[in-house]
Image (cartoon, rainbow, N blue to C red; front, side, top):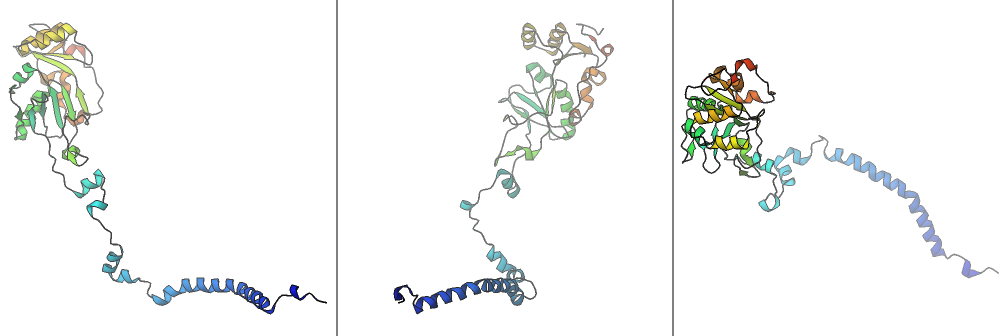
Length: 274
């Protein structure tokens, strides 16, 4: 006798049959779906041009983004490109707040020097008031030549360099590095002979430094520099120790220091040149 409880019911057989048929047709359905996805765009858009490409306004609407200030964060560089800054080159000749004397050569950049009262007086700069540069460029270039006699630093800067992190910055903010630095002390005798002490080769003794600060005129400076081993030249234009004055500041970049022949300049004497 057959155990009826172990026979599968007719309903169970039908379910198993349907499952078997559906499993057989699944790959076929997937294949039909893939083919439809590939060919439907060509049927709907036979010219290959999408609707928003025909209608630019539709594309702009599709790509529209909320650009409210709350949702936009611009980097400093992006902000610089998007907004024209209002920074300008400095125009200060002498600043009481910094003690710096500046000039602005026509070749570009800014030349600065830290001068004492004697040098300021020699350059006819008011020691008790801040002042501005010459507006006439020829006069400014002439002043630059006189200022560079005392050494100093040249900064290769233009207006854009003063724009930083969304604001204009000062030249003496500490973030600018000079491209050229000339270190020397200069004194001029009453007869016009120039005493030059190259600070790259000589260090002023503390007592001579104090004596130099106590000088009341250029002749006194020349005397003190003579004690320190300064060299002397008859005029600036023919003195090899001042050969940098014959070059534009921007031409001095990367030029190594050269020692001129000793016979061009004699050891400084208080009343003559050896």
